Amino acid sequence: MKTFGRLALAAMLAAALPAGAQALEINLGHTLAPDSHYNAAAQKFKEVVEAGSKGEITVSIFPQSQLGGEVKMIQSARTGAIGAFITAAPPLENTLPEFSVFSLPYLFDTVDQANAVLQGEVGRSFLDKLSDAGLVGLNFFSVFERSVGGSRAINTVEDMRGMKIRVLQGPGFIQTYDALGAQATPMAYSEVFVALQNGVVDGLETSPEQAVQDKFVEVIKNFSITKIHHMPSLLVMSKPIFDGLTPEQQALVKDAAQQAVQASIDTYKKTRADALVTMKTQGIAVNEPDLAAFQEKAKALWPQLLANIPNGQANLDRIQAAAGAAGK
Image (cartoon, rainbow, N blue to C red):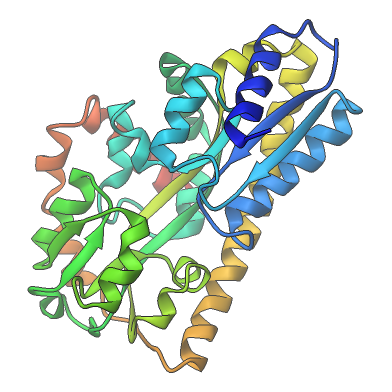
């Protein structure tokens, strides 16, 4: 049976099955490599759900965009065509504009601080907002620390002047990189490798482990740790499919998502550290600029960005209060 047919069948079964009538398959998609923190979290989720359901529920994992990109998976989950997906926060911004607050540059100081905030009341409140879009937010996973890989070293903010950098489509990324002097260049992720190879762009905003896992290390000479964004990731389920589960199954799915959090955090930290070592051994310069000037320029954009984010200032205040309580 073709993939589309199998997914459609699974969705129909999920929506129509009486509780416990037969095994239910949850198709869980994500866009990253099998050695990513997304996949580590997905595997833990699968392990807990399948063991706890005693065969009532199976979880099939589809990495590397096998179920489509993040925007497509969001749409598919809303209609019940797929069961669940892991996504970064920016692709949710068109559906839920309040999520745009997480694309403010230098919103957090560290990965640990960001993860602590997202595992607390602030994170839970944003997960709850997903129900308005036909989705169920199960949990946040580890954030990505986003920096710049490319042909040019970035040791001062002036080094970014005129540099064509592939960024995510969204005001928080485009306006930030433009303000830092770069030429922000949105493009499909699938096109970035060739664009770097051919010199169409000079670099990309990414995280160290993603640069290694997706082979960008083959076409970059520098990785500059600018830490411009700490980008959240989260596990989301189709509300039509979730609503078709028994209360016991729903509780199991939520517990599995909670248990998967630490797997994502631990794997992210390890793969990030390993990636920096890999880059150095492959002759890629790892640059660590003083970030004070970057932060000053980028944070000057906050009022302009917040003006176009629903409840932006109120949510920023809550995030900053939680970040202060969490420390660095």
